[in-house]
Image (cartoon, rainbow, N blue to C red; front, side, top):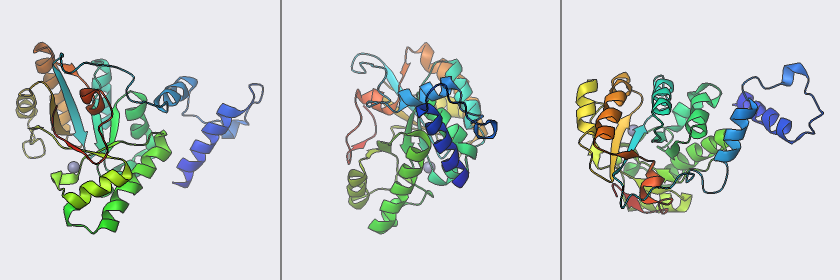
Length: 256
Ligand SMILES: [Zn+2]
């Protein structure tokens, strides 16, 4: 974490120094190109990720959502989505973000225009926890993602869909909307790409599809999911794009 903080400090200080100043070689940040920095600055603008507009009252929209990462297959998934020009929503687990080396995948999610959402810090069933622990589960992940990407998350998916009035009240306080789902691919149970693709392919206009990018079989199913839904005329959108605005804090959504 200290290294990450140092990397961020170096990045920001370089961005604000006069052009003539050249940092000494050992301090030059190796990973932040001007292009990457430009993308990150765009992602920090007010209104992100509403950089695109879709009228999902007229279009056949579907929101693919990937939970529990970032993990070892997330990079491959991001490559696939980029190759197809598709944006999705990633509900990340704080502990996984903390384990993501240099925040590389977490930043890629944001820089490549996907929506990032909170999926708690350690994936407990929130409905069984006292208020203080629910707050801690939300805040820790919110703060880490903001530290790494500059983005304050606005959407949250409770692990296992475990929720109640106390959870929702805490989400409202933290400025988060609760995002459930309408199509469950059960990809954690059946690790067969063709089965996962078939279930996701049953999406209806306005569906929010539940997937998990920590499973290789799910990522392997993505080309078939995209092909099937593209053929049916679907537009792939993020959760906020599905509603045409950032979902309201403390409200619950499962489809459009
Ligand atoms: Zn989960």
